Image 1 (tube, rainbow, N blue to C red):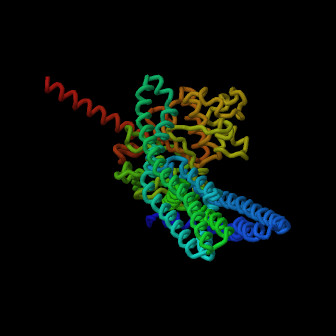
Image 2: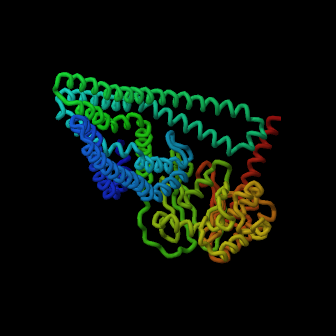
Image 3: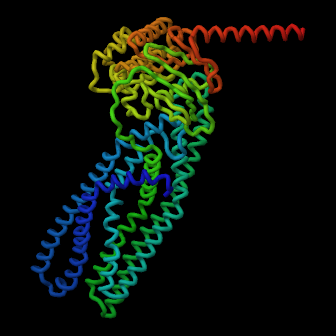
Length: 582
């Protein structure tokens, strides 16, 4: 296990430690379940050696009654153990659900590349895999496995040759399990990676189905997906073949051992060294002793999936530490300072924002302009706390952003990203940031400030309209207005808008500027990343970015005037140069 996963391993082990009581109880039940497994062999032994030899019907009926009672007890204990293991898996998942979900979201918000082995939501499926493992017959077999050597030693008490034969057979099956792990590990990993790649590409094609159909890309898209699918299928078949080979070998060999031990027992009966009852009991007991080993070999693919899930969860929890318990700071003033901020995108190697400084005061709107790729969106993500800083500092009302709890910080800084997504739920729940116990007055106020109220009222069920029923009916501008209302919900002190009017019509642009004016009048602040001049109409100061660095900073009119002067100089120089060439 890599050292950088130690933190995640510690969290997973702590979660397992919380199951200690259930684990010990299941082990206690397993002790009696396996002891009662001797009922069948002992019954056969007594039937052959006592009942048949003495031809005693009362003894037979008495034995049958005792056996029925013992099997009933064994069944009840096994049933209770199975339910206990299922609930142990559910408790393990319940303990980690919130932690893994939050870590997954935090990782997804900073990563723009998907890991080779895991993707969006994959860690929750890994947690589900762990839950299913704890409730599976395979995990129950692991409780039974420690009794295998005890049963093998017990066979030695019947006769030394029987014990040696059973021990040798058991060692062959154990070696088969180890060989299964050795030879199928690489193939199983390749199969999982190939399947994930094909599924990820399929999801991408479904999400962009409209573009694919409109551009006539169906055949090419299918060809590329089919290639990935074929690779996944080939690796899956190869992994399945390898696992199937060992499963078949172990099953056939165990059946041979049971027949062979009958043959050995018959030979010993003929020599007068054991009784027929011992011969039959030995075969049954050997099958019971080797059953857990065969289960592990047959379900080795489950073991591998569980191991991968455990490693993935450990890596995630190590990479994304648990949020610290922070003191709740009072509601801040709209004073934001960014000093010498540098940002390297997650998994990037070079800074896309280089020593940028700016300051926003209450009642002020600041615009950030510059060409595509200049670092505007990177600055927005840094100021909202989504991306970590490689250098510099960002403070809100004098406190560094990391001193605020992430959810509290999101209440104080409203954010409208370039790409607005609506989630399953009602329109009101989307504006209220998926809260089910939202304040209706605040939802309506936010919608009105975003000029979305009238539009929402025209929907089939108004604010209660489920988003999935109208998703394709909403224009980009309407979705952006709902997104703006969501950013305004809860009365944030700072509003960060990334290309807020990219999909807005004239009415929407007017409403956006009205919302900015209202924020300023209330003593709050606005930071706008923009391409279009209409978005910076109400801005007091401008920051000009170029190639991640600050090109200009100051009052809006002065910055715009300087930029226009520079453009005139460039044009004049170009005209003079062209005249000289002529």
